[in-house]
Image 1 (tube, rainbow, N blue to C red):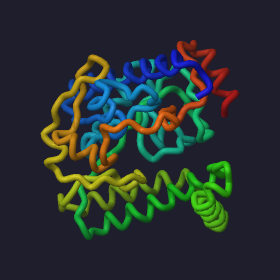
Image 2: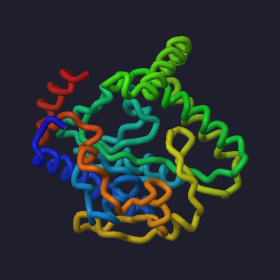
Image 3: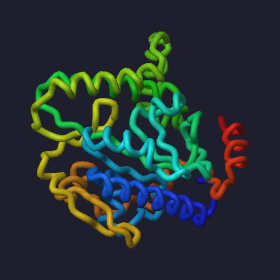
Length: 288
């Protein structure tokens, strides 16, 4: 991140405000959510943000996720934007984000469309161990990750990161051959596939990220529910019931800090905050 720590803290404060608005909307409308990934880790290990973290991850079961989308479209504060594949055709993510309308976050994935500071919300589904839905997830996830890697630059130095770069090269070749697959279509298709597979799936063997999300965790229902509260930046947010097991599945020995050279923001390059509508519009056009 090409800025001072004060800029990172300003980014975190905007994300915290978005989290509070999401929490308020969910509690008022009986929608369950929980802190996920690095945000959950921050709550447990740091009582708030991981000091170098520059994103926020939340999760919801599919029924709550769909309910949140329907309500948020009408009830989110005017300074926030609900980014979905339907509301922003340029989004690079099949899941939803709640974005701030008065800031610019220049990321390292060259995303077009709305580029305000954001909070990720991931859908979670029940799966059966040997179900068709898990096969759908593998296929869609591989396509999404391949598309991301197709656009990603090679990691320098090239030879030292040869294995990673060869895989990126493979993805670039494969997606060049599959030129007829449009990424925006893939995002839309993954959502339709999720609805189709969900309607036929009654098994509740385990909970995992939705079909359209290229991550895996495989949790038992009791790992997540009933939800409980933890303090995060002196505010109360919902977290999984067995967050210790949850975090071990994600990170292993999660209480051990990474090496100092790894304690850096992973998503953002530049942040601009407290923008007027006119300033946002002008700067957004520059970055598109």
